[in-house]
Image 1 (spheres, rainbow, N blue to C red):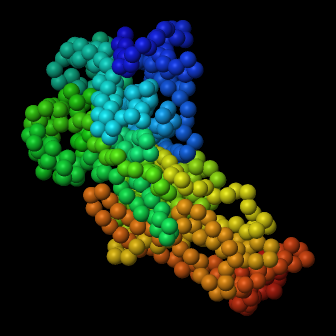
Image 2 (tube, one colour; image 1 turned 180 degrees about the vertical axis):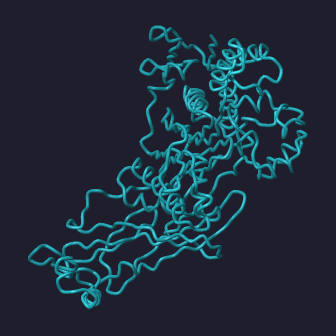
Image 3 (cartoon, rainbow, N blue to C red; image 1 turned 135 degrees about the vertical axis):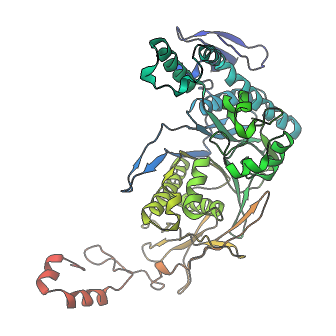
Length: 537
């Protein structure tokens, strides 16, 4: 059995839970941590007693393949993972993991990385360089520890491969000898056990400073709200993919033909140039055509770390997204405004919902519906939307209030923000999104704005327009801006005085449908109009 330690001093360990080959490590009397090299078999958590952070929410959706009728089916179990823990000394740890070919690596990484960072390794006295070093070491331990857990399976796989005759893979299974059939079946089992990998984006908050560690193609966005109602959106880092110039240069320095990599768009089935696990590209990369000329291991698990970024006096939110969520949105609307769109969705839901969990799930569901609607529409981008992968969104608020669920329209009025259609067109203006739908209170028409940090309520003046919240986008590598605006004309005010309910308790409609009823009646018989029950009764 492979037992690996976490590099802590004065730790006590003992067997746990009968036949399960686990170790319990205790560093505080009131909290224990379970380490299990066979975690995917016994389903024990390494960090099951760590407190969850209550200032974040997570939304998820499983993968989907659409049929000709628009109905979706699941192609594989959910492979994403995430973590959201509150440590000691003002330390918070969040992460989103995009697994592929199974969930083993994503699950392992989320637990092992937590143990490597929150079991006393970090404290408020650490400098920025200390934090970067600890983060880098943690990813290195995760990678090595995972491969230790599959060492035996890899060794058995290599041993059994020697018993197969040359070119055996071209022989139909039923024509193989009984012994060869057993070997083939066992090799398939072992391949399922050891294959797969994951990409990861991890956020660490320590001493009110934000650090982002990224391996692969997930995404981190930081949205800062200013006093004038603008949301400044910053993408932290770039994805490690086959179209990243820095990554292509890194591969070229190792002897890899970067032009071929760019043209192929994928390496061993994935677009990422950095990933956790995936023994094929770590140990057998010389057998992969694109990587065969590499002088040393080309696909690495070393994180690119961005930070520290001070969060003092910051109002806004942090978003961690899996590649599946990003790709679904970009497939539906194009990549130009994906960051702005997701932030606008989050801002709208934050003003509506009273739970961060609900906010996150609502945004994921909106992206899922948008992706599906584009597919069934048959429009130009429908061909890009025949399927989507697992989606995960983690939202961590930064001094950002949720909607007040106590107030109602009969208790002084309440703002119900809505989102307007997003524009994908390029423009030099700022992104402007109308986020307010006003519900009337008892004697006045209450209006308000979502300025991305507060919900303000007040009595409007006659003829005033619905205010807007403005969105700005910046990127650590490139900067872009776009425009998507609404004038609030869908919800016009009816004057300074709100209409009073009649004797039936109904409020007269905002829109006069008299002309519609007249036109309808002119085209239908009196009996049809009466039976149809159209219009007010």
